[in-house]
Length: 101
Image (cartoon, rainbow, N blue to C red; front, side, top):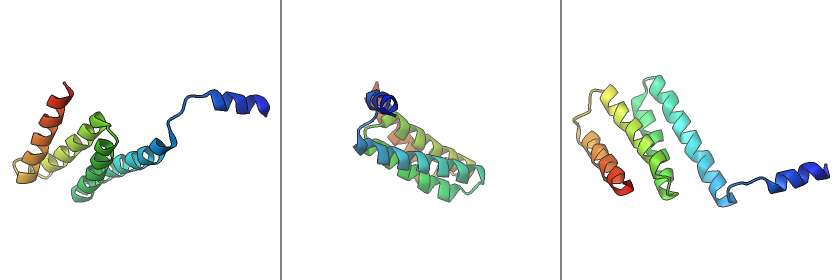
């Protein structure tokens, strides 16, 4: 048991302030993906929106972009890709991608 504890203590891990938000980020992404597969696009948009919010708050811009792209996919599936919301999401994605380059 002592050897196992020493090995566990030496493993690299995330600070505890990261664990819970990453857990909820993962849950929101998975829930959004499930809703998307079930063609419940409005619920999927809500989940992806929460995931994007958590990701951007934690500085995980690439994951946030992925969540926004999922939202855009939901709008396309609903044939609302030229709606005001979809255009706003496209603008936001472009803005963040430009910032990252």
